[in-house]
Image (cartoon, rainbow, N blue to C red; front, side, top):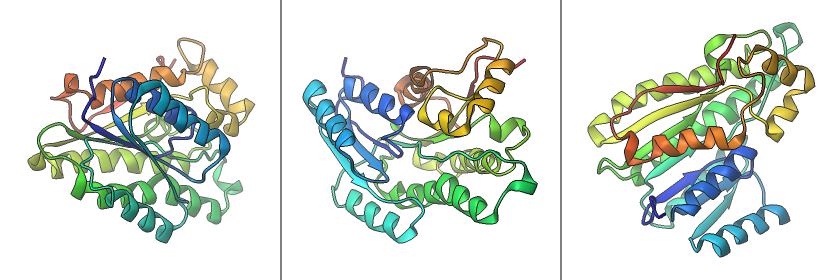
Length: 248
């Protein structure tokens, strides 16, 4: 216990399936949490209270819409006003999109890129000034096998994740002198509300192409993030870790 005691972990999209599991996992190891979500809700308030009560950790929730650049700026200003040094930044937030190009609206393209890439880039750029630079700081980005494999219907969502992968590789080199590691996790489809939004057809397709015949659980994805954030991964940098159960 206490692997992340005295460390601060910032997680975007913390009210999602993987976000909540990540929050619990880091809280259980003593981390102070900065959690961002699009909006407050009774269920999220209960979740934050549960984390504080069960794990006796500090939790700071912030709410801003990732489609609104000005709202993001204000949210980041409030986060930096905490005067805390961040050890782990997890760019976990994202929205799904699945459609072949002829049926894709440009307004949807802009929205998915804004949330999945531009907002994460803006958050990372702003918080770099408060990420620790002593060798324990790291940035973890949510990629996807959709950004690697290029399957049908993923010209937009996959492109946002390919952008996150490239950002990971570039930043790992740019920030190496600051002793900040940068890696990405590329899951296959995971059993979360995000997957539900993709539709039953997409879920069935992922189960069929998986060597293990199923989707990942949120815990299986969170375990990879946790390892990459820990000192056990101190010499892993610039990598994209696939967590897809094997693809046929």
